Length: 492
Length: 101
Image (cartoon, rainbow over the protein chains, first blue to last red):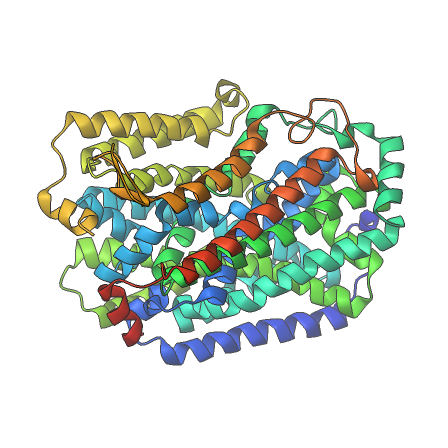
């Protein structure tokens, strides 16, 4: 561990706390195992999630390691302007997708037994091609995403115990895989309630610790304004990147484009009814607003409390704050909160990727006669294999956490257009959806490689606009969807 | 587009075919909260100029927090209203399924 990190290693206390935490989540996975006897149970809990499971599950899945490590680190360089990442629209995170598509997905998911997002696409557009493309995109984009979550765990365990980086990666990657292997999405949702609560507590106490170190909010701001007035306006630090287009992208990215993320969109298939959906919007909004406001503000307080952290180590800001300001036992508990942020994302993702392989590619395309029992067994194997690959990916450490997450969010975000038009526009057809998706992905890759051409916006915004236009034109230029599709999806 | 009491009829190409007037008001409330953030101002997006408020916080941070509070309060009131009006009543397919679950 580099000496300049200003963190007290507490190997004994940390190992006991994290050990207890991992044991508890694996136990919850075992409890879920007893109830997970069907394919529907494994992937969507049989559609029985209420307000707390639905709301905290959504919140804990969306907010990841990046929320607690990558973004506060970025904010440490930028100042208050950096809160533009997520804070302004945090409470809208489930409201927007819930309002635009949530009610319909919940209803149709219950009625027709959809288990995955690709399942919905395949049925709505009556297209195996689209189902396959969506399933393959899910695998391609989400495996690196899972790997990115484990990177943070490697850093935390290394920092607090001195153990090699790969130990933390393995604890998180294989721990989450184990309880999902047992309990499927039910295991993930049960543990998400614990993890989501821990994340909120971590955010609030880290902020409180920051106030203690700086002498309060007013004192911290006065000191910061004296040394760095740029931290109080856009774009923040002179080196920061915050044109209006980037700001607006952040307002939209974490609520509208989440509709295209399979691990989040499938949450609507889990929810019991409309009451659970609206209640979950409130629970998720509260969790997300509290977490982001307090943990991101901690990044600003760290500018005063721990000045001079080298650029390469800014991802460590929150662990440093916690270590500096709180008792070692409490610090260890809060570090479990950071692990929870990553684990709660990996668990839902690993189940979704397993579903893309076993349900969408195997049962719906390769072997249509496969029984649900055999697919359930395959799903468990797929969960194991995907979890191991993601863990290896994390050990290889291919990039910083936030970069990987931004890339995957964009790649899957294009699917939000297919979902929105699929739910709201009966004329949308398979040709339009396939053309729109392909055009959107091509433009996304092109703009990611040539960011100047995106005029300050996140590449997914212009790319999804292209996907929308292409989809509308191609749908209108080709035959309308078959009558049976209209009746299935729009008659009630 | 024509209207009937308490409902607004939507274009034929759109789903659903009609929307409750009360829901349109809620849509406006949340829509204004969401899109007001897009307009550059000292309360949302400043450019290289600091506007400070209580505790030395930039005004945009205070406004962002306020928007979150209003959004959550709005959802709570919406939940209460929908519950009172019986809008959470489930269609038969869902009722059967929920009982099984």
